[in-house]
Image 1 (cartoon, each protein chain N blue to C red):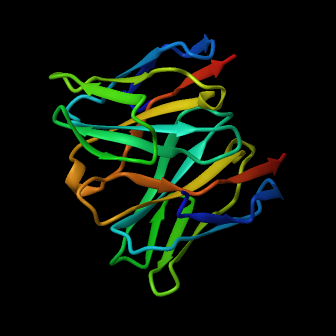
Image 2 (cartoon, helix red, strand yellow):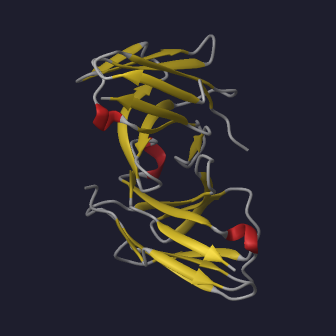
Length: 114
Length: 112
């Protein structure tokens, strides 16, 4: 167990809806990264938050947004859901963004968009 | 886009045999990491090797890194059925954030 938790475990939404996924970091970690993993693919970097500020973003549209709270927990919000957003969403916490050290992953939230 | 390319895409071996998985990447890196994923769940960190290291061991795992060829290999010795999983290499770049760039993964099946 990594100490990183995510909720919910599974979620089913319809096209056009909005969704919020949550992540609780490992104790003492100030950096959280979000990844999208489509079926049969490797995880793709969405964005990273470091001390409540966005610190890098992958090739995802603005309808993917996030927040990091003072306790370093985090949210991923996706607006105007599309069928292709169906995927496993993973968050990972790490000690310090600049050190590029090990990231500790949560179990993921599986999102299905119908 | 995915930087790492793992090879082979799938590997099936008998319990007790060694499994070798390869990864190639395109740009300069800070470090390279290997992760394991069981049945579409979260990723488990296996080992990290920094760009100034050539070889690292952890239990039954041995990883090598050749920065001149931009490639890495992961060796699992004396494999067990419990090693059945997907394995990913991920590179951390030299930028301001520590984002990981993953390959598509290797499916390893270890037959009892």
